[in-house]
Image (cartoon, rainbow, N blue to C red; front, side, top):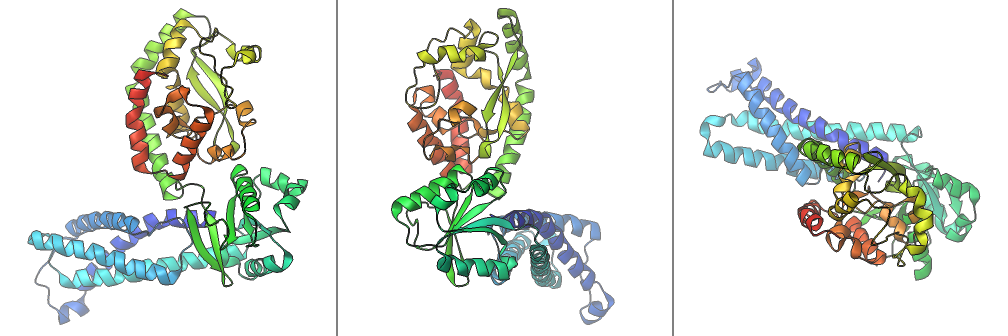
Amino acid sequence: MKKADFIINIALVPIDFVLIILSALSAYALRFSESISQIRPVFYTMPSGSFFALVAKVAFFAIVVFALSGFYTMRSKKLAGEFTKIVTGVSTVVIFLILAIFWQRELFSSRFIIVSSWLLAIIYLFTARIILALIRNYYFKKGFGLAKVLVLGASVERQTIVDAYKQKPQFGFKVLGEISSLAVLENSPELLGKIHKREIDGIIQADSSLTKDEALDLLTFCQENHLTLQYVANLFQTQSLHLNLSSVSGLPMVEIQGTTLDGWRRVYKRIFDTLAAFILLIILSPLFLFIAVIIKFSSPGPVFVKLKRVGSHGRLFDVYKFRSMVKDAHKLKAEMMAFNERNDGPLFKIAHDPRVTKFGHFLRRTSLDELPQLGNVLVGQMSLVGPRPHEPEEVDKYQRGYKKLLTIKPGMTGLAQVSGRANLPFSEEAKLDIFYIENWSVLLDLIILLKTPKAMIKGG
């Protein structure tokens, strides 16, 4: 998904809301204008204040209908398809309004205003999309907002795609390099450096005759480096269920999406995380104080500890916890590695870790030590639900494919935690977290959150 598409779809919500109101107000003004009144005398009036209040409610309802109709999906939109969608969406709103009038006749009764509002809303909304498309294309031609990509494949196969993107910047892509294969890319320090600096957004595979192993290698490379992947059709057909279909100069192009948690879904999740974290911090503040007092008086050291963790797209951040170990326990970890009981992956765990304080055992068993991470959620470094956040040295030991765990923000709780807690082998934990990433939904988040208290009481 290009940033330009994200910005446009975010902007469309307030624009559509205003335009729905504007279309109704325009119809209202037109109905009571002298020219129309002479043709159709006014038999029913509604105070402008009452009319505006009603229109604001209808506009809000319209935005909900539009969202459910796919108006704001995070992908490039074709104007022809948008027009059909607008007519359908606006007509649906008008039908509901007519039904409401039927059940409550005093609500409103001007057929002229209803029909005029319907027609004007379609005109206004479609015109807005034309203007936004023109603005987007103007900036694309100037080189702003383009997704920077590498094109892989033999010169003959990739030339069609490269020429199309050069001649038509409105597609939203800028080709930064042409490479014959993934092997060549992996041996190019310059391009790898740009990828690590996030100066490249994705890879386009033009060769449709890759072997299954070559296809898997490319898919894994893109997942580990957080790159979007597009390919000419008939490639990777069984690798993912999350696909975007398009065409470039007649070539069927497919984009693999690593997660359903994108676009507006990511916005919804962030809003929920922010509100929930803020409310929980207020509600749990007495518990925070109680735990802090016990920690302070039960063992020497600070109340909170700050630990390095790896977040989405490999970004480092400081995670906060209630201190459950003796002071400077992390410095003793190297000495304790010989006693690590987790030999199934990169994680470190000792059942009876001598560094853990008496009260710390209780905090860790109930996961109460992780409550300060609500602050990390509030500032946007973590989510309430997501993969477990791991230490940098643990991430360095990830096996092939595990870096997909860094696709989204880590969570305070997750599918792995409520499905077996710390007793799960790392490979099973990773599979559950990857399943969550690929199949995210609001319902799945709610199920995990509802199961979390039971998991905390049960301990692990």
